[in-house]
Length: 396
Image (cartoon, rainbow, N blue to C red; front, side, top):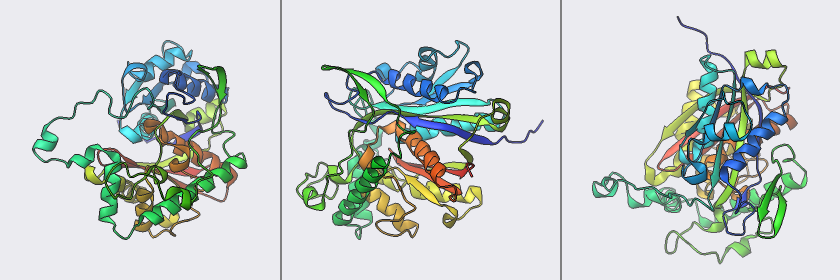
């Protein structure tokens, strides 16, 4: 018997601060699953109307499912966070879009009536688990020329995008990066992230401390200071650490609810999920992924790009962000619709967590801007994919 699809609402979203993936980083001696537990508990503590025994699934993503990021992290963290033993959980992986995927998969459970309350998120401890740890790519990829060798290195795919769009210069990418840093500084100075970032007590060699600020932002960066940065991916390249996101540790998550749960528990949702889509491109140009993903989600939603009031785009690399802006006719290099509070070049990119960072950031932007009706969260994905989600502001 056919049944009507249920509406899906984002009740809340938050994240840890993003630390640098270094031996002296804020989370260097913190387990990934403990970061997830912090987010789960924070989401539920902030929304006391949600009964713990009514969480229908706990869906968490990690790109490297190894060690403290392995063992079906959704189930282990459900137990560790104090949820009833009857709470199921699972793990998913779509590399950079892991958190976006866990959000969309949880939303689908609600849409078909298989769940009413979902916790979903993503985590990446890149200090303890370098990108690709434990991976063993099939030799056929290169032997049969299914992909170019550059597809296995994200920085090289960004250099490939420069080749594909020769009109986009390094100078533009550096300028865009400075804009991202300054937007982030302004938002941080104005306290925009007070509800987005949850403080976490962490241990280091110097004792206990509170991690409540991102370590990645470089507000002091200037075009002059970026001129002498190295090119780690290609001799005489254009991609530098200054116009790229960092290697980071962090977790982010969201609380999703059906319309039935919203009414039954008196919840105050922040956004309604309109539509989502995933798309794929050649792995060698993975940064192009947000373009077809956005085109696809707009088509499925019956919307036009002009209908979007705000866009949260994960800035893996500046060139990828500029390509997106160029393809959709946005104002270069500082369109007010794009990443108004800054992006990953400033905050960092702990892979699987970034999708939920975008969702949480969008939700709290909506809270301050009731005039904004529709928002897009989109990102590129390793090995040539793109993710896109459209949300409607329900806080006005």
